[in-house]
Image (cartoon, rainbow, N blue to C red; front, side, top):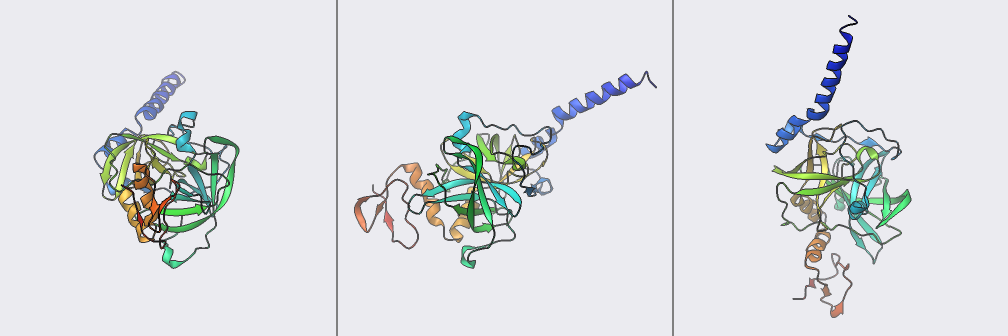
Length: 312
C-alpha cells in the first residue's frame, strides 16, 4: 500500500490541475450557443462584510484596480441595504440640487416599487472608495434614497439617489440605439463578495431574450447591480445574474438598455435618459423660456419645467 501512495498523490495533483484549467470550459461553450434558462442564477445577496478580508474562492475572476482603470472605478459604488450588499454606478450628477443618481439592479429589494407608490422606508447606503481620480484612505458611506425598482426577469433595474460631498464624474445611460457588437470587450465593474470595487474585462456574447450575455470573468454575488461601462463613457447594461457563483469561467447576465429605458420611462425619469443623447452630441441646451441663455453642460430640464429646444 505504501508503494501506491506516491502514485495516488500524483494522480490527485493531476486531477486538481486539470480541473483548474478546464473546470469551466463547458460553461464557456454553452454560453456561446445561448445557454438554456436552467443555467442562469439570479445572484443571491451577500452579507456586507469587511471589504478587505472577505474570503474568495480559487478560480476567481481577474480583478483590476490599477490607475489606468480609475475612470471606471470612480463612479462605481457599493450599495448596502438591510445588512447585505450589491453594486451600482453613478449615471448623473445634478449640480443644482447636489444629488447624484445611481443605477443598480432591482433584486436588492423585495418585489417591485414604482415612483407613483410614494417613498419607501428602506434604509440604503452608498459606499465609495473614490472621489473622482482621488482614492480615499478609507471607504466612505452616504445615506441614500431608493426611488424605484423592478425585480422582474429581464427588467431587473433600480434607481437610487444620494447627496455627495464632492462633484462626482458619471457614466450616463447610453441612448437606446447604442451599438453593442458581439465579441467586443467592455468593463464590468462591481464589488464581488462585498469587496472593494474592481473592474473586470468581459466579452459580449449577444442577446438572448431580454438578457445581454457576456463571457470572461463572470460575475459572482456582490456584483449584482454593477454597471457595464464602455470606453466612450456610457453605462450600457446592469449586472444581475451568472451561471457560476464561485469561479470566473461562467456566463454573465445583464439587463439591457431597452429594459432600463422602459422601466425608467415608466417611472417618469425620461429626462435622465436624455443625458446620454446630449452627452453624445456634446451640445448645450437652451431653455425655451430663456432662449438666449446658455446653461451649463450638466443642465438637464426636469419634468414640468417646460419643453426645451436643442440649438442646430
